[in-house]
Image 1 (tube, rainbow, N blue to C red):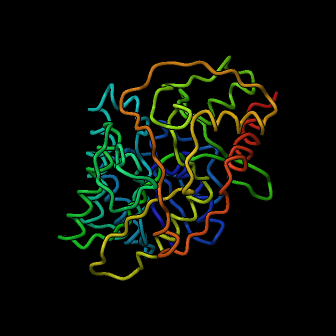
Image 2: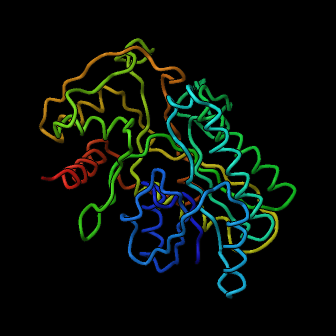
Length: 337
């Protein structure tokens, strides 16, 4: 297969690109490098610098590949801003980048590109769920602009599937963590600038790069008062993307949308994640309490039963300590002096 990967120089997209190439496929990464790292792309991956909103450029890429006799078989779309807290300060940026720019990609696909898309969605489309674990049939009611920006894309996809036969899978996941392991050990992990995700922030404290970890809100209706999230290892997530791509098939014509939650089915509170990191790293990791952040649901835990049943997906990293262990290995390697 030859696959076009938007946002493929990022943490998740780069991991998927690596898995594709390991299995003998051709991955073409399209990224503006606002948050991606070109130097971390696996060998053999073609890179094109560009903006997701540049429909004309993407159309030319699709047409050039088709004219050369090597058309793309599908698209994996990871290009997006992902910070829920930031989205509640500048929602317009998220709607332009995540929603409007993605429409440009979809228009290019309908006009002259492949009709098979795996879309990186989020469990944030559910907002405050009425029950957990969350199933795909749960009410969609985002509590932050980030989740809304992703839900709008899912709604556009549903119409393009119905009218233009664009086949797609929407994969809804929440907290992705860990680092992929291979013969050379861990080669890429989770890092953002500025960093806002819990596990890398905690590991920064263990490395002495931060004095303490901040806990935002200790008055949620959870056993220890802190938010509960479902953590999925990035390698398990990458595997799910390839299975979803395969499930979409290669033929033409209409196919019902595929929508899957991806997680390990077990939720861990902020304090439990901190305790896991203390066990794995052997460091005390001081914590400080701060008020809640706007738009943060109390509990988000996904049921992945449908993906396991229909895709044959089998996550390998189901224990939090194992996920943190791989993340710690990469952080130590990255910041080794």
